[in-house]
Image (cartoon, rainbow, N blue to C red):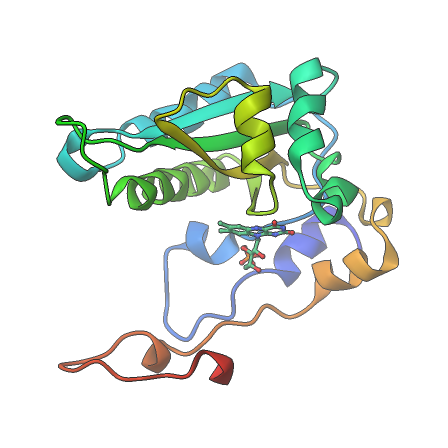
Length: 207
Ligand SMILES: Cc1cc2nc3c(=O)[nH]c(=O)nc-3n(C[C@H](O)[C@H](O)[C@H](O)COP(=O)(O)O)c2cc1C
């Protein structure tokens, strides 16, 4: 029941319509195989980012990544929320994501955050293809990270990502997190976000 293969199977999305297998299999685990991510694989992930679309081809995405046993890894870890610190050390690699805030003519780029998310989405699917799991985190102190990593003013640290090959021991997690890992995955119905012809007001607490 708790072997990595079974956990992965347990987490396959129970989709209402048939979707691409990589999308169906992807999930955000809190355990990872205790193996270093191959340099070649890392380059493939960043290549998937590189070929992502972006508004005006500005390519605003930036990443800082660090491997376990490095000072930078500890620095990223120190910026995570206490909840995320509890499990993120299971990941052999931690990343911070950031975006460039400006357009070519130095105006605010309203779509930069969109484009960073899109690029991370491409990275996630490429990762899934290679058996790599990504767990994204909003629980990161972006101001601390910006200072610690001397991020220039025109960039904004957005999130952190714990990354590694699928697998790992479930018993490395607290009982609460073990339970969360095996819980049925929930999604809102398409009717709650895809509106034909007119906007439909859905109260957010109805989700
Ligand atoms: C931008 C973003 C921020 C997230 N922040 C956190 C976080 O701080 N801590 C955490 O444990 N999970 C975090 N998650 C993971 C989500 O909880 C997860 O994607 C969601 O519950 C759906 O589960 P799934 O990815 O396994 O399908 C985040 C995901 C995204 C995309």
